[in-house]
Image (tube, rainbow, N blue to C red; front, side):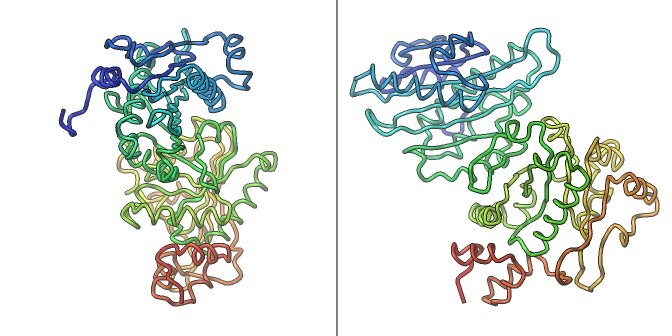
Length: 465
């Protein structure tokens, strides 16, 4: 078969069954035994399937894997993989076999329920060589089909894709991600988290894998914490107040940090009852990454490093406008959402050209954006000519001035005071140019932790003075 020809799910399952070196266990909770069903269906499963089981009852599941707070969770998936792979190693002593354990725990559309959050965790632990060190891939998927039977079908196809990718393309994690949606579509399933670990993936940076999910269209958003650990959106965002600041952060400057701190302070003042539970992110869009660095992997990691240096989580999104992001986040939380924007971003926010993809234009876009408890905090921005761009100095087009006044009056758009020690109009692009030219003055424009990180790790092409 040509490398450019997409294999069917039947062909992938049969190829694995005919591989006499692969042998392992399938453990599936919820939504049936949809993955292993493929291997039984295509024939030759006796050479691949050592055991198949479904501990559907919660009491039985607990008796096998131990108790858990939630049954469809990362923790339960790990319990299943730990248990099943250990049993394989203990029971199967054929020195010619590359052992594996596959597991999933899924909640699909329930009978009689019109709308629900249908999702699942899926993972594979495997050996690349008989008796060798293990490798592992874990994913979280949202099931978007509207019927139980179609969701079950999607789970089965996704599982076969995961097994096939890990067995035959583990030298190329990007290809594993690319092939996960083979014989599926983005309208049916979203993969919003993936985590690689173990011997075959020792070189893999999961932050790049988070970027790959969004870049390749498998997910709308992906996220990781300040230490580079990938986060699963629903677990992280569920019923949490959220603060987001979008930017290039190439590198992050004093103005970025002042803006962040000022927004945090105002958000906590506006919503004091939510202050302790607020979670914040610095947002990078794929459009932004493409425009500023042509989606260069090292440039992306450099940005992630400096954001981590100041303790910030990173959110990667495919949304060019904030209205799409807010609509997406509302699927996880009904709590307040704050957007930290500068004066220039305010201009973009109210520019009709940014809403031409919507039938309702700017009205629909802003209506989607400023849904219940959403507020954009506008930080004053100094322009190169020394003028200050803020809510008060912003001049809207005549035909939307009443709309802007309405947003201001209802506090959908709220001003926050300038808190910097002195006015600065320097941009990230200008700081980057100083850094790369060897001009040491670049350090004056960034926080100390950022400067130290750039110099220590030689980020953004820094070569020392």
